[in-house]
Length: 328
Figure (cartoon, rainbow, N blue to C red):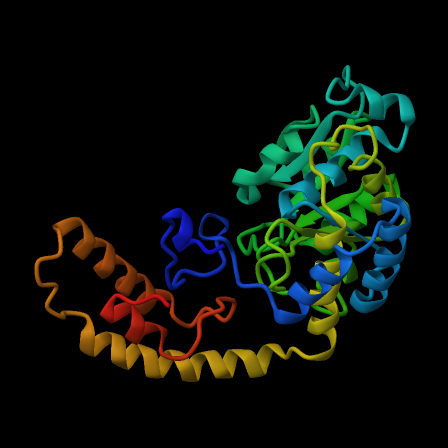
């Protein structure tokens, strides 16, 4: 069955790995791993223990789990922080009853997805200065510090925050969902406790997967709060096929992929396609409705503006197919 069979039109992705546009295209090895995983039953705790150990070895982290997306990684990490692994608190979520219910964030680093953190019953507290941060860390209700990895405008470095938070055993969570995975991990090296990634963006794993890396007991505690366990994130289930698919993507990343080579290749392809796109941009639309002309022009403009994004999975000649209206 294809998209066309149900009346859904595919398109050429010229705007990066956005969830609304189905992220990226899975690698062949990911599809193979998912098909193989679908052929047998396994115990999910045993599977995550084995996959987590392998992911940790590949990424250089102490521990790792697969989640149902980057947002789910943030959610189960927050659940681990506010409950501290206490079984009674885990069962009470999202009713925290005023105990360890505060999550500190930099004002400059607030982001849309902090709703996944608030979902566990936490209250976001914004800080702008080291003095404010120090005061919040001294509050016995503070459970977590959450940061946006790409917040270049942050006035307080991760190293500084970690130096203040770690002695108080307050975990530091970084949202790096849309970023490239690296080993050694720059955030863990800087003192972060946990880092969340999307499995379906740069890694080109299953779209519905996420990756949580970390140190100490926090990542295992996050897994306790996730499916298949009868806890808060039970509804954020990730299947055996997706788990093995993401492992295959990370295995491929660790042995086959090279950021510099991929970027150079993308720049070269983009140069060819941009030249073609520029030649065809003002083509004759014939009797096409005005709204279709606007969509085509907007897509072309997006490509011109962001065609060097190394994370998109387009092939050579994509702009030529875009210009002639063929996505196949």
